[in-house]
Length: 495
Image (cartoon, rainbow, N blue to C red; front, side):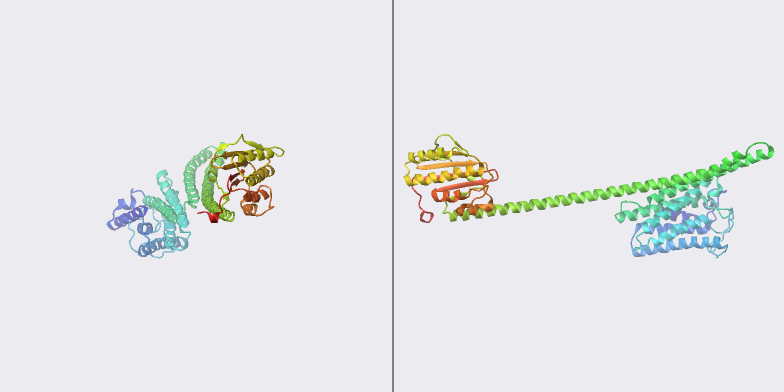
């Protein structure tokens, strides 16, 4: 939009030059006319800005480069004319200047106007170079300066301060020229903003500079207004001092002279302070964004790591389950089906018959003799042979002894199914149990013992009982022994 407005402004004034329309050249008859080259510069800058913003096609960007370069070179040659007091013949090359109001050089644009075109055209041309990564910052800086020059020039027309739009006795800046540079400055800043947004950058590093330049422009406008006002007051004071030599006005005059300078210095200081505040705010925002990004990244990594650990734990659990199942099958095969390794309480056998007496509590010095008597009575009631009774007593004695030795205590339940001729003994403790790596040696090796295992007793129990269920873990061990009245046939002989 800013590019289109600049193009329209330049085209309108060009038409005014060709049609001799003074209203388009001056706006107000007492104001300075916009030079022909100035209107041409606005037309070229508008085309360059519009082409830069609308398309990334090579042809369009080429047109933007040519337009911006022509406008920048036009301003640069005009500045050279002022600097070297020369006339390169460009001022009236395309149009004879028929209006000379407030003009020191016919057809020549004001020096501030030429500087503004240099600040607009050359950065726009540099912005067409894709490899130039700093083009958004350069364009934003140029836009800030152009906006400041336009604001200072325009403020002079509203405040009546001629020095705002005229440098010395040189050609002055027209009112619509100043307005056009305000539009171009805003357009350049928006272009820089758009390019950084397209590049994915959230922070605008040039924003503190723009704020500082804008605040400095306001300080300069205030200084100029105060300077004019104080100049009038100083002239009145000197007039009074000339009329009355005894009037003490020297100190008052010094204060009046120092006031505009103090206002300028204070305004520039505030501009620097404001720019620094914006910079610090941006820095804090970038740091907060970086911290948030790091936190998000850490959270993502933690979630991913947690998932990996969960998968690893699941794999280890599955592997442990497979190992335990494999071990259960191997031990069952090696013990000819006698040993049943259980994973949960649901794998334990149902309680057969009826409870023979009350539960027995085993301790270091009591319980084992009562356990042997209880098991003997149950076996005799079921008419076990002396050999079967002796085997049962050996097995339950080893189970009880291991509960006392490795857990410190235990609980025993003896059940009898007289009809089926079956004695079932449950021995439970709250010890640390048998670890997975110790199970094979504990069940198959005579004499093996270590804290938390059944050691020597488990091997002997398997030799003297018909069936044995083992549920063991870190919270305790349960051993279930079953003895039939008649020895069961070997596994290989079962039908």
